[in-house]
Image (cartoon, rainbow, N blue to C red; front, top):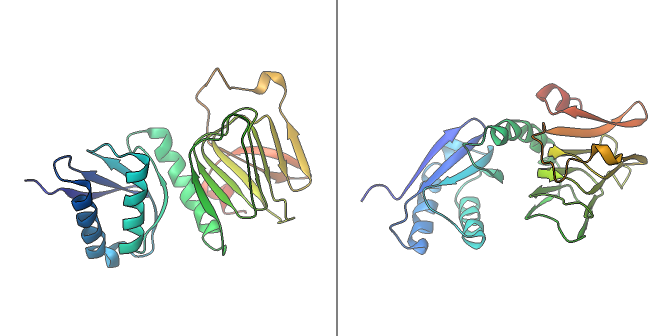
Amino acid sequence: MKDPVYIKSFPNGLTLHLVEEIPFAELLQVIGDKFEDTRRFFGKASLALAIEGRFLTDAEEIQVLNVIKQHSDIHIICVVSKDEATNKKFVKAIAQIDKKLSREEDGHFLKGSLKDREVLETDTSIIIIGDVEPGCAVISSKNIIILGGLYGEAYAGGNGQPGAFIAALEMSPERLKIGDFKYKAGEKRSLWGERHKTQARVAYVKNGRIVFDAITKDLLSSF
């Protein structure tokens, strides 16, 4: 049998190729051994992860991430499809943002979209792997990163933290608030339903108002 698990790198990320032929429990053991063997090589890198070759349920994917955490010092920023050009570009930017988040004592991930008028409120910075749909809201005392589309509402910097920001792969919010500054989209600005391809953007406060800029390394270094 071919190697049941092998790891390849791509810019700011790793591809984990898994075979279908062996039981999942056995596969987890092999994954743990692989990452233990490469612990010193990868060090404490912050990377995205792409999984190929085998379909995993959400529960199985979480188990894989837990095994990687136990057997390496790698910080997995997010799980992406390596072949999506938009994701690859965004991951490069998120890797820069993650350096800022990694210096904080707290912060967490949510895997899944907010829908059906859900509201998520947290005292930490948060990365959402999914969409924030219209009518939904995410509220953070610190920063918000959305690996998907922001079509609802987002409120960041509620603790008065200077330099708070909101970043999204697709930025088309109904409302934003960063600190004491507010933004409300006009009816024509919403891209929900049209789903046009948009550029990853970050919203932040500049000269007393909320502005939207394309995410770049130079821009992120200013936060």
